[in-house]
Length: 310
Image 1 (cartoon, rainbow, N blue to C red):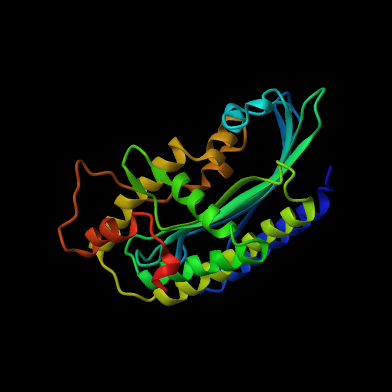
Image 2: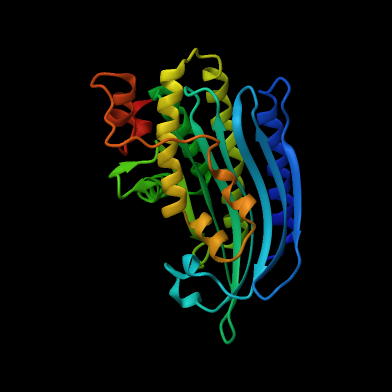
């Protein structure tokens, strides 16, 4: 089995780099440190490094968390697509982040990269990498979506021409709200079980995960810089809160990471840090035709070949 320490060293360094990169936008507010340890019990043990920002000038809430946990039995959310692993013990470590900006013209962003291994008596141990990043605008700008996907393409390019279209499509499919029949945002990358089938060795799989992690800040920071001083009013804040409701719906109904954490008995504060500080729901809301709010639905919440727009 691969050594855990080099993966852990990369992930904690990635966390530190993203914290520093995002703090550079804040004139005063800094990320709080919330490190935790869970003593071993019958379900789970582990530790984490929490980094949370709230009420900043640019970021209304954000969490960038590293966790390393071990358990004696994979929860249903992990075995639904891998039934052969039912009953396996597991070890997983990763960095997961969600950033909720204050200005509605800055998109919400999400990213995670993780390593997973599972062991079952009488079977060979298995390992894989997973992760990705995606962008959720409230007011869409084609140039931002194109730039985001250009960075996603660059993250994948050294590893094969098939990687970007494959994991872009997986992201579009994964972040689709079935009950709303709409995308959560403009997508990005999503991959899982990378390396589990033996088609790539550990070194390539680890390198790909690092490339995805390293491109998150390259993709997001320029968009924040471009949009952070855009004037906005109560109308935009109200629409932002309404669209944040969709984010909550996805995370609580579909998101594998949230379900895995809750089903495995993980730390609720760390799992639910992805929730926005304010969200709203309106009954049967429809934006005014021709408005900027309607443009989000008409142009940005439908899967597109964003690279072709560049």
